[in-house]
Image 1 (cartoon, rainbow, N blue to C red):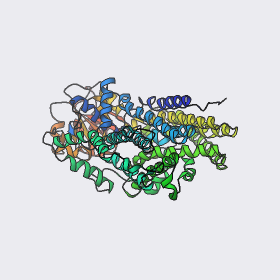
Image 2 (image 1 turned 90 degrees about the horizontal axis):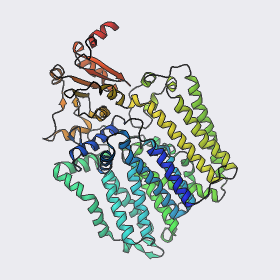
Image 3 (image 1 turned 180 degrees about the vertical axis):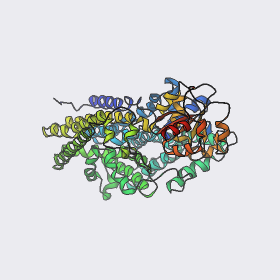
Image 4 (image 1 turned 60 degrees about the vertical axis):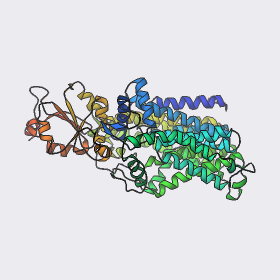
Length: 608
């Protein structure tokens, strides 16, 4: 039992199968989320509809905040597979598969088969990798590009790959990273490479390698990849360069961006959360510090030590940068492959050297697994008398939050809410127990490789359980349930209105395939583009809305959960009708859907 061979073919096939199962296998459900996820999906849809792959649009409005590469891939996915949740997530899921394999190849080439395999397991089954591929954000893609760029650079630097293939390939990948994550995609790779060259004094194998760097030809390759899109958008959208580079990057970094529609995670919390993002592999990271080469030897490092130094610089630069600037949790994603590589290397070294700390760390993880599994089981037991059906929103304690962490929505959980999460909670308990306790038992029997495979499989069980729990949260986090209620009612002449900014309900637009009017919503993401002369006139004010609502056409008004009170203050009770209410969101219409449907005024009279 649990006998696995340490072969390259097995490792590649196992990592490939695991990554495909965890990321492609969970891409179809749950629904896209309101906020950036749904909004970004619409940007890709409109790119395809307009056949405009330069200037992006959301709801017909120019949208210039983001680099285009991820949106190109999603638009291509829509062209091949049609518009769906699965097609939206597929490019990112495949990006994670590529990231897992690239991390493996990096670790294997420089440090050996075992270190590479463990690093691939760490990045593939880390909790953070899964959480931040649930939304349509490009973090995993540029993390893959960073890993590939550093791999190509190091191979060329060490003379194991031709300079043209290595350095020019690195430059091309950095160009793609700029098209994926804008300035972040170029500043960090160039910064890490520059620090590495300075730290080693430009030396490798006793030779002054810095003189061989094809700086100008590599810069040309980079520009050939990255420049055309920027030039084209700059010509077609006046003001693009100042908005995109100054407002969206420099001012965002110092917390002065307009609009101020984002927060910043407290520094100590941000650092502590890295234990979660690569859990449980992050518990081996402290032992990776032993692998940092001593500064006095940096000039004469062997190839493996050079790779270790570059990996430390890679992680360190990104973590340091976001320690002094504004930060969201996932901003450090570009460093996670480096952390996974260091964790994999540390674990491999501890096994090879029979480190006395290894059984202690794994025993501590086993205790944590027992406690966590018991905690989930207790919550399920305490909720045993609560009916499990219906809308989970009725079991949550929703309150205003800063919305800066991945756990904000989960802070709304009550003991009663676990009635709707019994299956996922028990699955998560089983996953943690398998990953941490069973793997510890297997390791005690002397099967180190099998123990780490068991740990990865247990984390895979947890990820599937978490995805099921995420699906239970769908009514709270997505407007798709309301869209499904609305679709049978919609007629071609009906008009759809979102109260507040578009990001308050973009999945309603996505799943109904309708553009929307915005009532009191000319702020945040679409504000800049709304001032172009050709922007559609879709913004309603308090002065416009009464005539619009009482006009000749049927109008559906969507009210986000946090704005329902404002909506009810503005709707005429005698001419407004509730269509549906799910997850705290509500949908109203200005005509009765049936002859006997009561108005809001009549409903209020009955309640009183």
